[in-house]
Length: 147
Ligand code: FES
Image 1 (cartoon, rainbow, N blue to C red):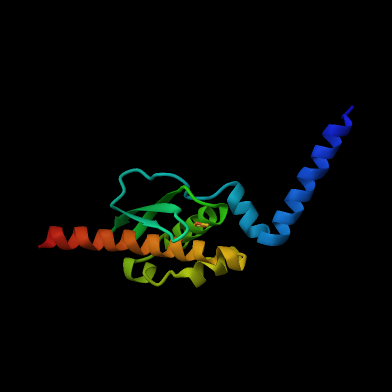
Image 2: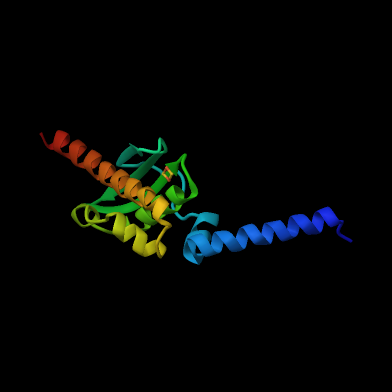
């Protein structure tokens, strides 16, 4: 049998979960609980790293094959929204050509996530810029190899 404290903690937990669901939506919460593409990938071809104005950093790794993104992973030390935004960015990039992936922007990330609170929209921008940085890194390496 649960103590009064145990019941109070359960109620508090349910309240926090309900508030998070209302604020962020189911798609974001589910991705936050188990973010696809989290972590380093084997044999990355390139990487991008950005730090947002909030001070949080993010890194995205890509494996490129025949001009297409075949694997993507991320590490991020920031807020929950930055984790889900980086995860969404990696998902959006999979299988795309580099030129096509360059079009992935904040709006594409927000659309996949079903939106973020206004205060967290910059986290989606940071993720898109980090992906762009990774693609630039690959283009620089390719140019250097070709030159
Ligand atoms: Fe810094 Fe989200 S990335 S608050």
